[in-house]
Amino acid sequence: MSPDRMRQIDHWIGVPVCWALTVVRRARAMIVGRPARPATPPQQVLFVELAEMGTTVLATPALQRLKTRNPDAEVFFLIFKHLADSVIALGVVPAAHVFTIDASSLWTIARDTVRFMRAARRHRIDTAVNLEPFVRLSTILCLLSGARRRAGFHAFMQPGLYCGRLLTHEVTYSAHLHMWQSLVTLVNALWESPGTVPMGKTLAPGPEDLIVPTIATGESGRERIRQLVGRATSPGERLIVINPNASALLPIRKWPLDRYAGLVESLLRDPRNVCVVIGSAFERVEARFIADRVKSDRLIDLTGRTTLSELIDLFNVADVLVSNDSGPAQFAALTSIHAFVFFGPETPARYGPLSDRCVPDAQGEKRVVFYGAGDVAEIAYVSLQRTDLTLVGVVDDRKRGKFFDVEICDPERLTPEALNGVTYSHVIIASVRQHVTDAIKARILERGIPPARVSYL
Image (cartoon, rainbow, N blue to C red; front, side, top):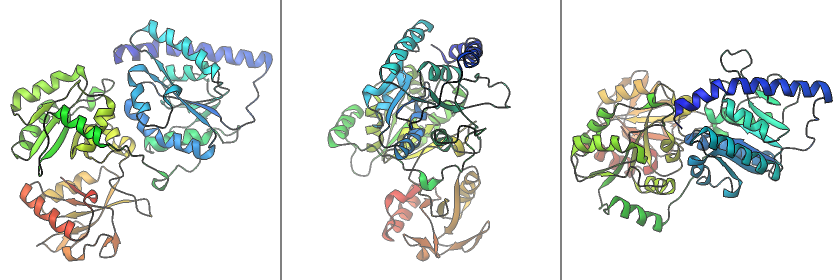
């Protein structure tokens, strides 16, 4: 089923169904009284997130928070069938606890909803958490699960977001938090006082609370990727993954395809670079567009040829990912790859990958140092203003003085721990000339700074 059709169903069917179920719920409360709130903590907990592959990664901290609050809780997940692998790959929910709904037609959705209701009652689901803000279908499914404790975002006075009054824990939604923080507030609300209105007004979790899981790749996985790619990268070669696609739910997030083609063409001028284009089988037209323009035997088309597990292995083998804001970019944050992700119209401040490539310091800031103070650094500095990174230092081999309001230091002052006594987490090489970048990287590594803390523009 197309995303547009799903939106139409969510609006034209979802709104009246939410209204009708709200009326039934209130009438029942007037006749027989409101059901007593569970006296025990959340035990059999269902998370509902139907349509976004990347959100399963952003929801991981919320699942971790639940297990911290109640280590004995059992976790279940409800998601559309074609995205089930995105939950299983994380390893935080047993495969047997992943419920699915086939979204190919209205009939299959209705059929699998009935199957889900039976399974939820068989597992005695007592708590449901709706991870999708203001999606009516997922709100309805939380009610149909039979859970007596239901948490989700509520519109309150916000117009156009009506989902009825089907939740027992109505949490206010803040557009000023990263999505992982917002989802953790849903779990925290399960322990809030029942009379709190709205819920979710507690202190949001900070960067120090974020534990980013990692997914490793064994030798067998690496060999499988070498076979898929069709070549063994020789020493000095770089494997660059290109993801020119984005979820069909929001195609506006795509960077223009001709610019991807131009980028690949530019990258392949360096004989050490090998580019791999990824995507689903439905996105082969984008790969063909790039291939027709570039025409290189170092451009490899893997669209429709990888499972999610193989895609994760590819990220662990490759050096760099260039991607739109999408599910693969979120999963890349769980691997060893360096990722460059294009955002628009959404912001990385809310939807950025949970990358631990830039570790927050004790003050909760993500501090970086520029190596280079030229024109490229100035462009990078302007781009930095739209991220959650903070420039705390600049070093340059020749220049001295000020870079905007930051002192330009001699590279000799740069240590693995700090620059001029100021701690940092990452060094960004502000150059696009390959031979200059290689020389700077060599000097940085000589100073004992780990390669994982060095990035390039």
